[in-house]
Image 1 (cartoon, rainbow, N blue to C red):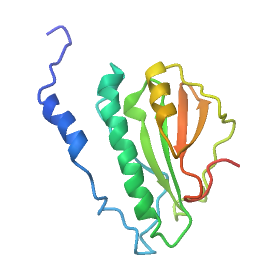
Image 2 (cartoon, rainbow, N blue to C red):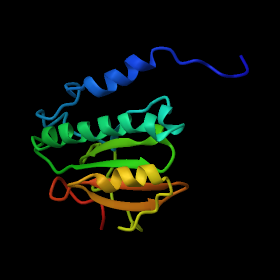
Image 3 (cartoon, one colour):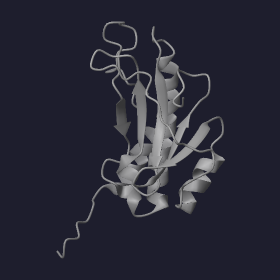
Image 4 (tube, helix red, strand yellow):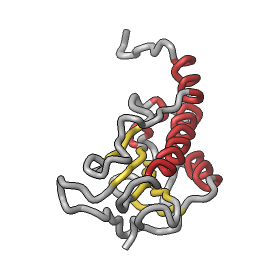
Amino acid sequence: MHGYKKHRGLRRYYKNLDFKTDDWSELSFSNTDLAWFDLWHTHFDWYGYGNSSFRKRKPHLDKLFRHFHILQKLSKSLDKDFQLWVLVLDFESSSDALFLHTPNPNRNNFPYLYSGLSTASTLTNAALKDYIDELEGYEKLYGNANEAFALLFTENIGRSLVP
């Protein structure tokens, strides 16, 4: 009716965001021949629920950073260089992503490097800026490419993302 679609089961959806954790068993970390990632990434808010309010976005971000730590532990077992980072856009929650990248047979694009980033926030979404400011243990860099974004990674884990 009038283009509005009621989303059923959201209470269960958000509860699962809090409690379900992927084990990433489909990703190969031990087999050197199969353990390569060409800008592999995953999104945690496929439907863009977090675009309408930060209250809806926060559980997706919480899960994204939980999984960052899981992949951080798993990637340490790789027998090759890697890069692991989070990319968070100012307002487009469905584009927030967790990235893993290694040398790969598809193309010669390792290491992947970002340029023109700053340590000063470019975010205009106050709630998101506050959330990121409260995160500890991350290097935080900011940029703008059609929309302001934050790039987060941990120092001394994998290769650097900046030249």
